[in-house]
Amino acid sequence: MERARINRPVKPDEIAVIRTALERASKSPSYTALADGLDQLRAISQCGCGCDSVDFVEHDPTNRSKPIADATGKTKAGGDVGVLVWGTESQVTGLEIYDLGAGDADLKLPVPDSITAFVGGAA
Image (cartoon, rainbow, N blue to C red):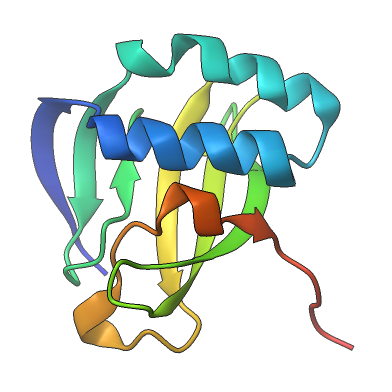
């Protein structure tokens, strides 16, 4: 999916989702410290499908981002979504929201209180 170029400060609701995902579903305890600098992030691109996924840095093949938090949550409308916080050892690089039953029209940020660590996966 094509990424639309944008240039804006991170939104308070994005910060809340990222911070909660890092607290509740971090892939490593060291990643929780990345929550301290979230208010300095700038969104530089967003997914073209209409979901709330955004990138905060350019993709760098020499310093690849990876999922640093893997969570699920419920949107305000009650839809189930997945939440991946992407990053490196030193920074948060993106926020991905994906469908777990919410449907294309409700791929929005989840309510922070609803966020829990993703449990499950391929057998």
